[in-house]
Structure formats: structure tokens, C-alpha cells
Length: 122
Figure (cartoon, rainbow, N blue to C red):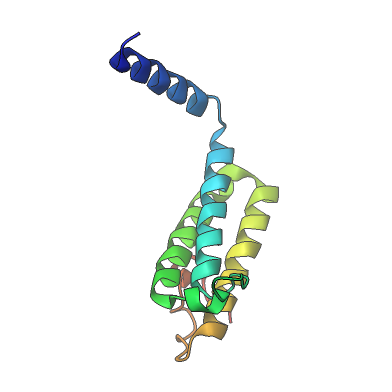
């Protein structure tokens, strides 16, 4: 079997694998990835032997991630069901509040990351 035909088979299998995943799972997985990245960027990463979690803080990046998460969570809430949506909203709110705590200069109410989608968290 040639390299090209092996890649085609792998691509076909990958498409089939993706096709087998429910949209709710894709949405929640994407949300969890955004939450995890935002948590690190807001300074919530645990300390390791090599690096302190606070050293990874980047509030500019956290703002972008939290805003993207807010758009995903609010935009998909009706489609993912109340149980999933509630958990995602809780995680989002926790990140928004953590961002406010980590900010030296606080945003005005309604101006924090993602608050254009969720409303003010304070």
C-alpha cells in the first residue's frame, strides 16, 4: 500500500470517527478546552516543580478565551440541554469572577470578558 492510499484510509477513518460523535459532545469538549485554557491564563494553574501556575497568567489571552467560551455557551445552551448548559454556565461564571479577581484594574460591570453575551457577573 502506498503512502498516499494509507493517508486516504486514515483520513476516511477520521471523518467516520467524527461523524459518530454527537454534536453535544463536540460542543462540550470544545467548551472544556476553552475553560481549561482560560483557567491557566487567568492564573489558576497549579504549581509544578518547573513552574508556578501564576507565572502562566496572561489576562489578555484569558479575556479572549472567556469571551469565546461565553459565545459558545450562550449560543448553544438551547441545543445542549439544561444539564450540560447549567454546568457550562457555572464554569463560565467562575472564570469570569476569577478574571475580575486577577485584574489590577477591574472592568466596569457588563464590560468584563464574555459579559456582552452573559450580562454582568457582579
